[in-house]
Amino acid sequence: MLERTQNFLRAPFRTAILVAASLLISSTLPSNTLTAAESPGLPRTIAWSAYPTGTGGYSQAVAIGTILRREYGVNLRVIPGRNDVSRLATLLAGRVHFSAGGSEAVYAQEGVLNFAARIWGPQPLRVLLSNFSDSCSFTLATALDAEINEIADIRGKRVTWVQGSPSLNNAATALLAYGNLTWDDVTRVEVGGYNASIEAVLNDRADVAGGACNSPPFLRLEASPRGLKFVSFPHADTEAVQRVRDLLPWYVTHVATEGPTLPPEGIEVFTSAYPLLVGMNTADDTLVYSLVKAMHEQFEDYRDAAPGAGGWLITRQKFESAFIPYHPAAIRYFKEIGVWSEAAEAKQQENLYRQEVLRDAWDAFFPTAPEDLREFETAWLAAREKALAEKGLLTLAENI
Image (tube, rainbow, N blue to C red):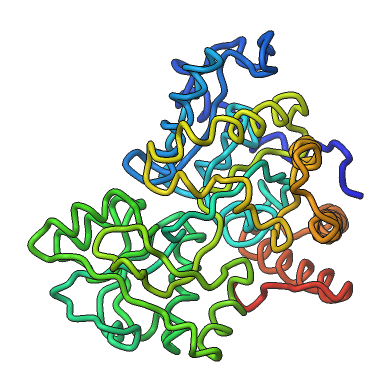
C-alpha cells in the first residue's frame, strides 16, 4: 500500500514556503526541535499549525501544550494560520510537525480547490487523532436580529465567504444545500479570515457566519447588541441530510450540546472531526506514537481546559468512518490499547488505496500538464475525476 516515502513538493514551491515559514516561526521554533528527548520519546519542542488565536482549535492546542510542559517538559508551539493554505504549507515544508485543522486536510489529500495547483497536488497526509466533541465542527451562526429561524430564512441574507479557506466555504455550501439554497440565493460577503467572519456579523456587515458551535468568538456575538442564534438542521428530513452528505461525505449528523445559547437538550446539526490532527506520511514513528500516547494518558488533565477538548477522548475516534488514513505508529498504539478493530483496518486500507490512486493520477498527469495555471487546474481536476471513477471511487466532483 501507499507507505512509500516521496518528496511531493516541487522545488520552486518548496523554496517559497520555506522562506515564508522561516519568517513566520524562526523566532519560536528552535533548530534542535527534531532531536528526540530521553523520555517519553518526544522532542523538546513540538510545533503545530492551527486555526487563529481565539478559536476552539487554538485554545485546545494551548491546553494540551500546558500538560505536555508540566508532565514531560515539552514545549508545544502553536502557529496560527489564517487560512487553509497557510496551515498546511508549514507542515509540508517541515517547519511544523503536525497541523490541527479541519476539512482542509481532506482537500489537500484530494488535490482539489486551493490544492489543485501545480505547486500542490494530492498530499499523503496521515491522521494521529481526531476530535469529536459535544459541540460541532462547523455550523451556521446567525445574528438574532436577522430573524433567521430555519435554513430557508437565510435566502437573501448576507453570508460570509472566507478568502483562502475552501474548507469553511464548502462546509457553508453544503449546509445551504440542506435548505436547497446556493450562494446565488444569498448575498456573499468576502472576509479575510475566520475571526474576520464573526467580526463581519458583529459589525452588521453580514448576518450569517460559519464556525464551530463552541468557538470563543461566538461569545462576543452573543454578548453584542445583535445577539446570537444557531439554526438547527432537523435530521428527520432525510433528503436534506443526504444533500449535505453528498457534498461532504465525512460530515455526520450530530446533536450539539456545547456552545453559547444551545439548550440543554442540544440542537440537531452536522459535524466532522475538529480539530483533526494530521502529519505527513513521513512523520517520525516515535514522535507520533509518543504524542498519541501522551494525549491519551493525560486526557483527564486537559479535557475541561478548553471548549471542546473532551472530544479527544479515545473512544470518540471514528476509525471506521475516516476519510484520511491514520499514521501506522498511531495505529500501533491503538492496537496496544485494544481500540483498533477489523472494520477500522478495512477502512484504513480503503483510504490508503484512494491516496495511491490519486498519486498515480497526478504522476501520470503532471509531465504533460498545461503551463497556464487555469488550464492546469481544469485539466488536473478532469484527470483526477476520471482516475477515481475508473476505480469506482467517490470523486467529490459536485463540490469542487
